[in-house]
Image (tube, rainbow, N blue to C red):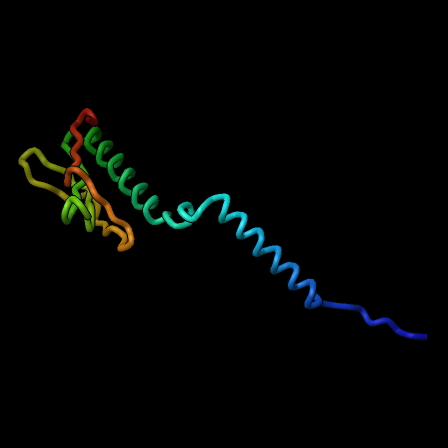
Length: 122
């Protein structure tokens, strides 16, 4: 009477097939979505943060009645950081949020270094 051994684990051929299939699927995903989709998450994240900061400034201006805005620090062609600023009635400025540094690999350029909202949100 011969005993059969129970087989456990994967053979080398099975492992090679699995790794090959994973490579094919990864290549198909990269071709489908493109390099830009995987590579620009930093830029999208920075744009999302800036748009949320502008929304925050707009809502703060409506809520308080004092002008609020987003102010970029650094040259307009390549801002290095940004802050949400409130302007009081006496003209003094108060930092509400920030400064937030811009990621090194992301370039933020704006036509104006300050974006202000009044009590109507305009």
